[in-house]
Amino acid sequence: MSPKKEIFLCVDWKQSKKVKFWLQSELEKIEYKVTLLDIPNYSMKNITVRWRKIILWLQYFQLAFRVFFLSSRKHPEWIIAWNAVNGVFVCLIFKLFRRIDTKIGVLNLIVHDKSLLLMFLRKLIYTYSLKRATFISVNHTIYATGFSKKFKVPLNKFKILQDAVKSDEFNYTGINNSNNYDVFSGGEAKRDWETLFNAAVLNPEISFCVVARRKTFNIAKVPPNVDLHFDLNSEEFYEKMKKSKIVVLPLKGSMTAGLLVLTKAMLMGKAVIATKTVTTENYIVSGKNGLFVEEGDYEDLAQKIHNLLYNEGYLINLGLEARRSILKNHTEHNYSESLTSILKSNERHWHCK
Image 1 (cartoon, rainbow, N blue to C red):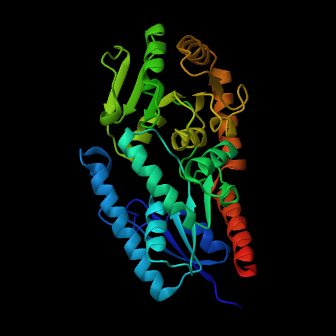
Image 2 (cartoon, one colour; image 1 turned 45 degrees about the vertical axis):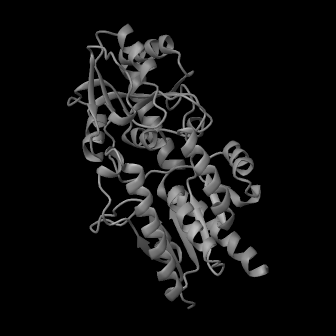
Image 3 (cartoon, helix red, strand yellow; image 1 turned 60 degrees about the horizontal axis):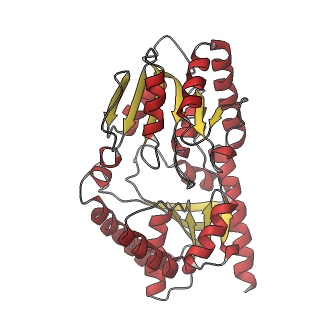
């Protein structure tokens, strides 16, 4: 039996020692020996304190150098970086030191608008670094084309991988007697709180729970039927979601956002109302396993929330179909099989060069 190919899997968080990251487990089941490298001193401060960007960049550099020096001794077949910013730093170090003996996969490239200075620096660094990547994953062909032009990276380096959720992470909750709220909405990137709050104003008898990041929240007036929370940890965040009947994902702009919340809500069996985007369309068939609204249409959102809450049979059925579709198409098994196909394809091309 031939020895298993070795992968360094780099993640941009502090991984629990009690539970393996699902991607590591899935790759090990297939045919790889996986070493996970994380950020050991990562904490909530990384995303809430004022100087979080500087802290994160220093930690990314530290992790990239660990990967570089460890790979010099162990020579893994692959370095896989989750998420893409993490991968950019790994590619940067390997390109600066002209190390070309290891293949690098960069997962989940997402780019959101920042200040002009940060966007300029990002374009400069990404254009230089991503050329070192063997492949880069995005979740839609539109983004592959756009990033290829933006960062001057060959289009054939981009591969499509849709976001996944660990199938046993949440049991079915749907609606039950422990519901504290009618509607839950939460998250950070590209959230359209103004549209959600306008919909709440039109439904004063309906209770809303909102969990946001204080650093990105800019709404001055919150309706009285909205229970607002800031900077909850993951456990608290998803506990609020569990105790709500409907999950609303109000988004703005065309870039990927909200898929982590969306997939976990669907796994719980929640009825979801989401802004229609090219990536939410990968998961929702409107009217079958969820509902869509157009960006900014708070009147339609208000009406759909009202109609769902007063049609319990339809509410339950949407949630059941949401869970079925996630378990069929968007689990860790689906993701890992697609990723393995990409790895094997690039291994063949690598050896043919």
